[in-house]
Length: 292
Image (cartoon, rainbow, N blue to C red; front, side, top):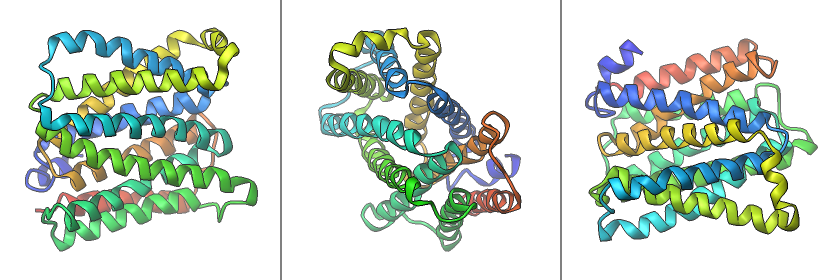
């Protein structure tokens, strides 16, 4: 981490940005593990959505509203992040944490980097482009270290890849929107309020008469997960105002390493030599991205 922080100022946005994004990665892997381990993942995600909405309400009074130019991005982000939430539920229903989480997170950086370079014209050195490729390759190896998915795992892989595409989309949207908002906190508050409402409404449509059963789940744990998720992404939004889209998005994917540790220690999943080498590759890629 010291090496990354020392090298990061011009590529990522500064040592403070690196520290914030790495902290966000830890929080992100933690709440995803909580969701994966839940018996009723729809109930857990719904309670997290309620936490989003409840926590966002007071922020609407404390923070200035986003500028008019940011509102289309807020609306698009709400739709994408609601889809992302249920994409995770679907992926975790069919697949193991150590496969679906890396695949979902690993799809995003390459798409974000390509968009930032080809569409936005953000400059990336050869070393940084190589680093992004190495990180993506390492994350994909972490997903498929045990071989190609069996037929029954294909639904999980498809859901994870689709989730990764939504991650890339809302990362780009938020990276553009928050810079136009004039208020990071206001942008985050309105986005989380809309996402929370969307998650709850979809759960109501799915469960209908059984909706009250959601509140029989582990309510304190799920609400805490919602607060952790909000904190994690709010930190990323702040970082996106200070660093490049590709740099922040890729550095955030260090949550994969944390997720692998969680899978090994808590879920008793294998972490052999191949995954160890892939993890080292991810770290090497991050150092390349941070290269000045």
